[in-house]
Image 1 (cartoon, rainbow, N blue to C red):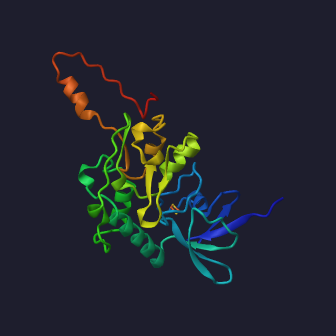
Image 2 (cartoon, rainbow, N blue to C red):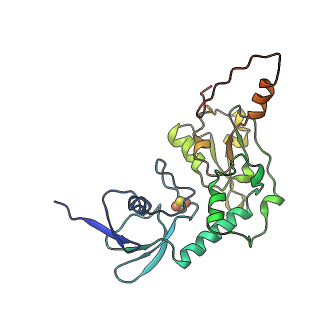
Image 3 (tube, rainbow, N blue to C red):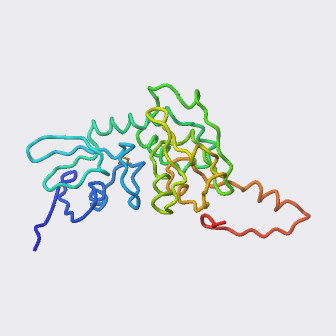
Length: 243
Ligand code: FES
């Protein structure tokens, strides 16, 4: 018989077994912390730092760490929303928003955007950092028949890069450059329509913002419906159709 392994989350004793990280234990206990880069079906990346929590060890030592990369440890106390932790998350959000095209009203992802949701939840009203997106506007890539890539809305969470590689074994998307110049781009910086993309849509499905969105053809459908010369049959598809 193996000993029961437990830790304390927000005062509640929680048992854990083989969860790969602290975040999964938090979620198993019915609690949550915000995430951008973590996807349970992809490898942990630890890039965004939104999932930070405060952890207190039995000897009194306290650390702040990202819960998606930290293994659960017996006997630690975990705090999800301390002042320090919330301040870090707010700073992360401000930095991301300073780098982000914030034309939310006309964004296809508006209302379903995780950055928008957390900016609201964390009451972000002022952004202390210079607005980089205005100065360095990158061209939108609409060369794919299935989706549109807007690098001005990318938060570098890397979910699309991992989905392309881990779900499809394709690696059509990757990181380029370093530091503040880092960006996600298709192979060799070419338009997505000119690389070996199979239009599976996995990258779009995991993108938390409007950086990757399904090509919107609603207006085209309405034009055809209103064309008296045509009999129009429309078929709804849940996600993508492989071409
Ligand atoms: S969700 Fe944990 S670092 Fe991004």
